[in-house]
Length: 363
Image (tube, rainbow, N blue to C red; front, side, top):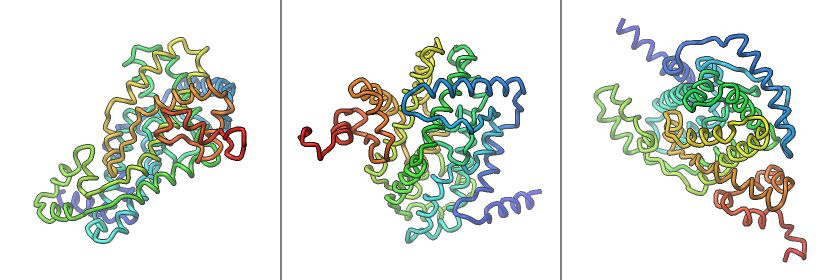
């Protein structure tokens, strides 16, 4: 039996590719739990809520809602399996960076397995807490469809003493809104470029890892080396570029904050508990959890998700001062997105984006 276990482990570790997705799938199985089929009546309710949500969101200026994408109400296990590789846009640039850097020879063997374990753990823990595709900071990009994890939606309602039907409607509206943001022509490419740009700016000092691996007597000690929010970054001696990280933080903050702003406008006449829902969501976003910690472990990637509140306030202020059309300008090109600093300085953003430098009346 012992030999077969090691044979199985050896087979998993030999899987080719920059990220060992086969190992990731095995880790997910151990974290995401057993399948819990969703009742047909529940699926039907979510279908009806999706139609209603699309109508509500369509009434908010500046956001076109693609109605062709279905919404799948699923259990944790199904979501995790469906999204095993949905964060490859995050992991594969890191893998290529690791394999391409000089002096990183230990990573030729360890890197794909290390990232596979991280990917599997991250997606598995996300399945225990996320509500949908856009609930972990960085969105899951592998599917054109929309997903909600039904047990987590119900748990959110129960834990916050909220009415279940309102929470379901709110969760569906959020998923519709964020999917509409992702559907913009340039958004997906801009997000991926921001991720790739961040990893391109990473620097490594693998000497510490080489020393630890050289002195490691017990293979199980690798698990201890991976504990803590900055474990992988420390293990590989990673240093990130604050400016590149800020660019990624800004696009994530604007995605979440604009989503909150649109949800509030779309649902204000429909959900009596909207204020309580928003407060509970803000608390939840600020709470540390294993999925977010694993994201941070990847090169010390701290998304600073609390900035979403700044972004929502930015949206309110832009509309108050200059109207809906001014806020629409944010989404015309990636260059129009506010920087991290501009999230709390809408006037500065307006001076950069809204004023025509060729118009003599603005001089």
